[in-house]
Length: 219
Image: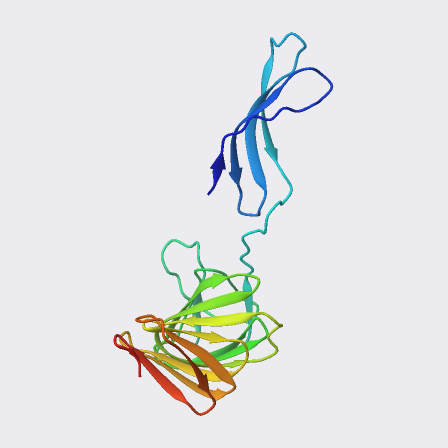
């Protein structure tokens, strides 16, 4: 969080000065100021003020994701709870940054934000790592899922973060598998940009191709 020290001279209905002693940039792109003002002509009375401006910069966005078309055994936990309390996923559940998705001995499927259908294999753990207006990032801790990404608005991107590589998707059908030491991408339709975390090497993986990322790079 940025902080500032400033002196502000304001023209009100008197000859007094207003002073802002602390100013911070808030999460929604506004500025919050704390200071004092002299409220009498002779300067004998001082009041403290707090001011929050309208948004002056791009806000830090975190729009939730709504799930639908739930099928099979899919469990979710939302952020902000004390510990991880898992519940069966239901249509209309809202996922935000920090939410987790898991399957156990049985897999399942659901649609995320009306654009991405996830077919999740057993023993898979996914976390909503971050959400902005342009990019949603899913962290695949372990397991495997197939995603069918359709009707993505222009300029929006889905990121799959894995232990050894990162996949960048704008619309395609693909499968990702994570073992903890190997991150595998298989593309069924379209193309996916796949980047190694080891050396930063990037390849475009096309329909029918498969790439494995390890601690030595892309294979």
